[in-house]
Structure formats: C-alpha cells, structure tokens
Image (tube, rainbow, N blue to C red; front, side, top):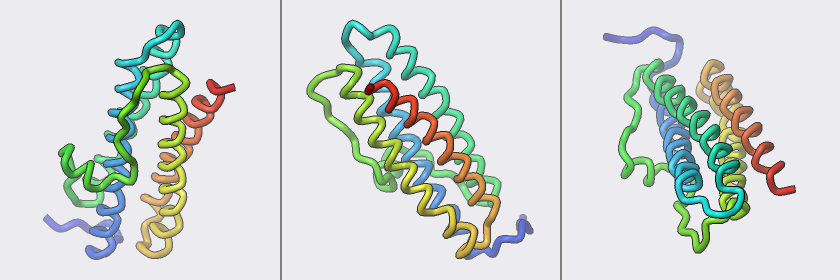
Length: 157
C-alpha cells in the first residue's frame, strides 16, 4: 500500500537512512550503559547502579521511538547487532577497570557525540528532505540526550 504523507519516496528513503544511524547509535549507547549498570564496582555501586538503570530505561524508550518513526515514514527499522555496528558513529569500549567515574566519563562522551550528530541533522532534515516532523522529532531526542549529559556531567563534580 502506498503512503501519502507529504514526503517524496526519495526523501523518505534518505530520512530512513539517517534515522537508521540514529537507531544504531541509541542501541550501542544502550548496551554501553547496560555494561556500566552490570559491571560497575566500587563503594558507590548501589547508587550508581540505580543511576545507570534510569538511563537504560530512558534509552529503551528512545530506541522504540526511533524505530517507530522509521516505520511511520514507511520503512523497516534495522534490528541486528551487525547492522548497528556498521551504522553507528560511536565506538565499542574495552575497559581496564569498572569504576563509576570511568563509566560516567565514557558515557558522557558518547552522549555528547550523539548530541552533536543530532544537532547536525536537524536543519538537513527540515530543509533538504522537507521533513519538519522528523526534524522536530530528533530535536526532542537531542534534548533528552542533553539532559542525560547534564546528569552525567554533574556526577563528575
């Protein structure tokens, strides 16, 4: 069934490709946050375990929203670890120790990378691909990552 949502098929495909990269980043960040949640060690374990758990819940919701946005513009959301690793702008991390400050610094860096990636796509989606809806959607995602980055940054003081 064809879709009539005011976005050309060519633009729709480009938007879906951009969203696929965002979805990959969100999934990699989710796994890295799970790593912190599961493998954290230190006297602040319980407090930070709960702290990371709240971010996991936020990221889980974001992942679902991004995948649903891809579906709402008529495309299939990528759903494999292999594809996520091919698409992501983040890197996997191998840690030597599992202290909260190390995890927080690493996750903060990743959230800042995601923020900059999203910020760079807002105008492109609106102007080049004529999709104000997706532009607005990723503005909201950026704001969520900015809030998490603020929380992470505050833990480093």
